[in-house]
Image (cartoon, rainbow, N blue to C red; front, side, top):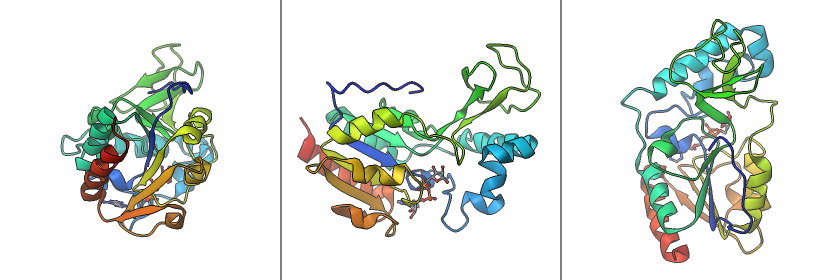
Length: 243
Ligand code: APR
């Protein structure tokens, strides 16, 4: 969902915030667990506008390498992604993901917004066109929309840049009946602050394999791997909020 406009007359009953932990079982490295992604690179070198300006070749290589990993046939949605799709078929649910992989979409989830961008997209800094990409691209690549050479960048929100779709997400948070956070360390804002934006009557749940930075803000917690705990939670959510 590259463009997302929220219809307050048709609110989402459930908002689910997902982080890298939901994709761990699928074989995609998280960011801060031991062996996480950052250990191979300094954040400021590959995930900031300044890093891209200083060494674009390194940043292109970093995202080309992650895109190739994502497109490896071994990387597939896991039971947690599929359970959320099942939830969305029974209850009006919005997935707000911090992840840049497409595993929610590959699990046929229809209502997904990526607040940190998408690995399988490139954005042109000249005409702002967003392209779906599966191949490597770099400073030699040409935008197919405006034919500019060297203007393509990963359509990823870097540190210091504004996450996407925030206005619509805050409207959705104010109206939802349940808010669930899955597999996120709760360390990066604004996503880490979403739980504080829900209405007083909203029921909150967290799924993580360990206590996170914001666990104490949730009324309900399910400790364990998302691939096991999310399907269990989804059955409870359908019983509680299903039509
Ligand atoms: N099941 C459930 N939770 C898990 C699992 C699992 N199998 N594996 C890891 N986790 C949890 C970890 O305990 C941790 O709390 O997932 C969380 C992963 O945290 P991070 O690596 O910090 O990832 P995330 O919270 O998504 O990072 C948020 O920070 O670096 C930026 O833009 C990047 O979107 C990312 C944002």
